[in-house]
Image 1 (tube, rainbow, N blue to C red):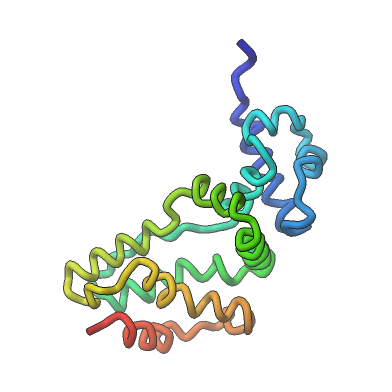
Image 2 (image 1 turned 180 degrees about the horizontal axis):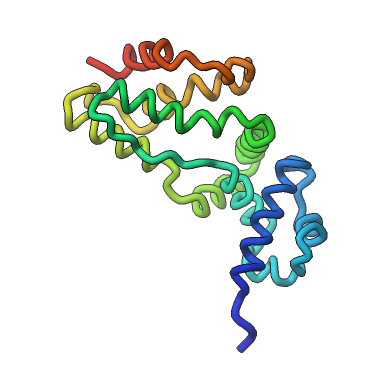
Length: 186
C-alpha cells in the first residue's frame, strides 16, 4: 500500500492549474505546465486526476464564485442580490475567457462535456432554490424551468460578457431586474 494522497499537493495542483488556465487558456493548458509551475510531480497529479480534462475542469471551476440563494423576502430583492453576487463570475476578463473557451471545447468534445458534468456537480443549486421559493410564494410563473432561469437570469451577463464587457462595470440592477421580471412573472 502506497503513501496516502497528499491533500496539500492536490490543492497546490488545482491552484496552479487555475493559474495556468487563466494565463494560457484552454489550448495552452497541460499537465506538464502544471507540474513545472507547481513543483508537484506529474505522477502525483495523475494520482489525484486521471487525465488532463479532469484537472482542467476543476481548474476552470475554481474560478467560479457560487453565490448562495439570497432570501430578502421579495422576488425583486432576491434578484438584485443574486445578480450582485453572480456578477464577478462574468466581470473577470481572464476567467470569462477561460469559461468561453471551455464551452467551445465542450461543444466539440462530448467526453470533456461529460467530465464537466460529473466533476462540477450541480452548479444550478442556487437558481433551483430560488425558483422553488419564488414559485412557492406565487411570485413567478410555475412553468418556468431551471433552464429558463439560466437563460433569463444569467443571460444578460453572458451576453454582456461576450459582446460588451465594459457594460459589466456599472450595471443598473434595477433596470436589469425590471427586464427579468417581465419574463418571470405572470
